Image (tube, rainbow over all chains, first blue to last red):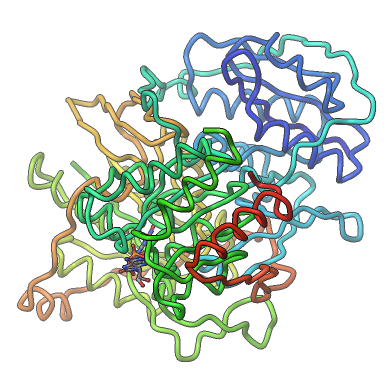
Length: 318
Length: 248
Ligand SMILES: Cc1cc2nc3c(=O)[nH]c(=O)nc-3n(C[C@H](O)[C@H](O)[C@H](O)COP(=O)(O)OP(=O)(O)OC[C@H]3O[C@@H](n4cnc5c(N)ncnc54)[C@H](O)[C@@H]3O)c2cc1C
């Protein structure tokens, strides 16, 4: 089984979600794994060697176009006669993967939280109905494409690091491949995004007003965490839209998710229930958030958060 | 401007989900079905563009007789036309995208608008698949945009910020919450929509490319350690996070 992994450049390295994809491909027992990178600096992919990837194809690009990236990846996978392609289910991956699947007449399995080899077929497990159910899905086609939910699969280094050979792959692009392109990227200055954070501290309506969110921000600082929010407080204009976690917001899987004054409505859970450790602080012991919590404190956020921040600060030294 | 808005019928998010007799899909009995919430943004966007540029808005769904309800909602909101593409019920995402694309080929729209995801299977795949099948550009999860002649400038959320994207019409886009404020249909319009025609089209059925092996309700394997708000308990929480869970 030959697997192609999409490697996404990030600064002078590649995204952690790409390393997770490589690890997942190894875990499936692939006979060979090849990386594919579109745009960015090919040298930034050297780190892939530590994860056991030795062969990387790179298509240089001065502008980013999702359609050109999809065409390039599909052509590379075809030239390699690969049987599976793995990408991260992030903003870029979710646009590229369905196109690649259509081009290759391949089955597409999005948002996987598990991958397993069952009777020689790759089976993806994925949450559906806002996480209220899970399905195991496999492709009926010779080739298949998987998008993995970021931060659910752990990136593990290979026992033996290998040296990386980068070769250039030149795709055949047509005019229709470049009719959509990214002309600018606006970074959220100085603020950690919930999609990139290892720890998220989120606040809900229990905070009573925007003026009290310093309690949440303060705990987030001590944990080097991103601040998240429930839809109720985003709709009320207390917090920016980019912080919203949940079905209408962002889907996150941090190492720790701390929900402060959040009831745990199913739409909120849809966005955070795959977090590794969930902590809830809520004054109502019947709040549904406690049903998914690893640790909970039944108490008033106004009393608990200052004490908790101070004690956590003593551990983290912040 | 000739606009197609694709809508889908999904279980209300608050419904309880049970696994059906086939072990692969949900038990549909007793489930309340609604218009996919994101599709309201898609319909509204279509209507606003029609108000600005003229043209027609066609609401389209791939489904069965029960899907007529959501088409009537779209008509009540102001869509000019409704189309129901019949489906075997066994189609996967690709099969539905294929039916939408085949219909779109017969009307050659300037724009196809979808909701960013349907809240049943949350696949986020439809805009890209339809775009690919029609060789059109697509932009998913658009949070704001402008159309100038045939050029489009759109913004969408990415990890850590926003991307500004340029594309050209014809195009497929999927709508993010915040793109607009969907209107509520008025009672007289709801009444009128009841007697409006719905065009029936037979879908081109293609073999499914993925198959569900099994469905189950997730078991939570959470620790479930619930403490009090005493200083002692808060200290214990910090110890547990540090020593047991090792997250700090
Ligand atoms: C289609 C659809 C999509 C949706 N998408 C999302 C989404 O993406 N994200 C999302 O979050 N929601 C979403 N929702 C909304 C969701 O249903 C809830 O309304 C929302 O999550 C509630 O936010 P909350 O928990 O902050 O507020 P509430 O439900 O009002 O909960 C507040 C909680 O704070 C507790 N509390 C109050 N005071 C204190 C105090 N002093 N100390 C401690 N605890 C206190 C209360 O006990 C309560 O549990 C969606 C809804 C729909 C219909």
